[in-house]
Length: 434
Image (tube, rainbow, N blue to C red; front, top):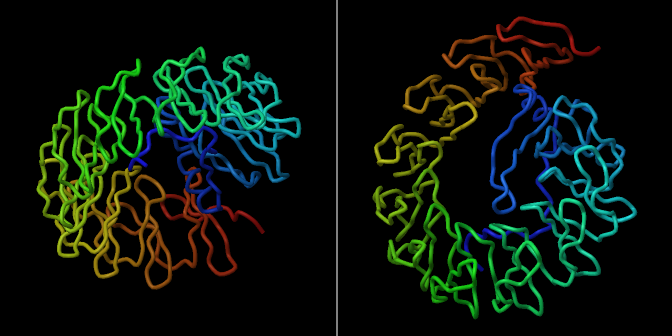
């Protein structure tokens, strides 16, 4: 099977945040956290986590059309507005996220789709239903897959043993252990002749027969011969290919940009891919050029212009030219893209630096983490306190527990049997409960 699968199984459930009190409070410090992510092949979605107000067992991580799913404590699922109020009452045994203004739901009648107002669009008569993409969603009936449109009309009769979401107006389907592609009307446009087919990406689809991989276009024409032992789908105009036990890189014409020579190759991030050869790590660009030499004992994918590398058992950061930004002198480093800060560990003590490597908080604490843009919880000698990102103490480090979240302008403190709130200046506020 290919190292990095672009095609996802159609009925995989979306991820769910199980909200503990600490996580809930942390999420509330921003009101709501959202970020863009590629979901179900080419469909873009917005994901979010919402504070559960202690009323819900679980809140799903996907915000769409101002709604997010919630599993209520009575065991049924419904949907919340962005402010946490109930938009669609709990009445479903299962409810997916909304995609293209439709969500799959299940009751004792069966499974179908609803719209954002809770109206049933796809009749609840199916055994299962997938998420919409490009105006189509899979439905399962009597162990066979078909597709419905946005109106819930059956446009492809359930005849397939396996089916995936549409990507670039094509969907992978399988019958009699062979896979091919249909178009949006349900017509077979690429015959079911492959042992494995993957969703289209950048105009090409990865396919395999008898254990060898290649690429075809939307008309079924072979663009890259099925000669490779493994491959990934195209991204950034390139695909990774494997011959024997070595990985290389090709462009969308099949031209070899980097001959198979690497023991390991990661996907591209920030225009660079992590590669490994003989237990040394470096980076190549989308031209196949080795732009950062393979000199590191370990390394990680680039994120926001920084690559975490390790040498002589010490970690630091480099930029995309290979220049050292943060010297390799730390035992452990963690980059937090939400706050743009970097947590460092040295001799079991924790501190904070910025992306330029400037020390903001020296490594003197047993633990440290953000609760807001400029406020951090620190731990020292089994006690907790608050500091700002200039290393100035907001409170003494004397509390048994700090909740870990920032509820608007305050955080919950627990000290022995006493519980109370502190504001951003360390001032004590009202007692939260008796």
